[in-house]
Length: 91
Image (tube, rainbow, N blue to C red; front, side, top):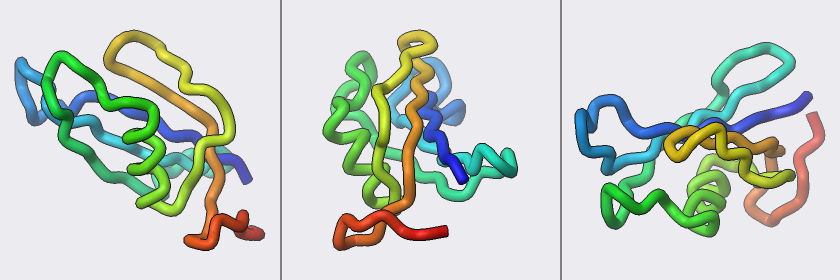
């Protein structure tokens, strides 16, 4: 079972994006299994890689590959589930 995280600006922010939405998809089923959002410090500065990883960890996942920037606003990365102790979960 594989997972992918997709980030994009919250469409509810309107013209000025303050929030990044995180959606984790189970790639084998094509279903969103977790989602959350994080407010940026400034609308013109996307979240840092460390802050993105922290949100992913809050959802119970960790990134397993590099961030893939489709464009400035849309970012993807492969990820896997993990337990709070850091050990990977078996499916």
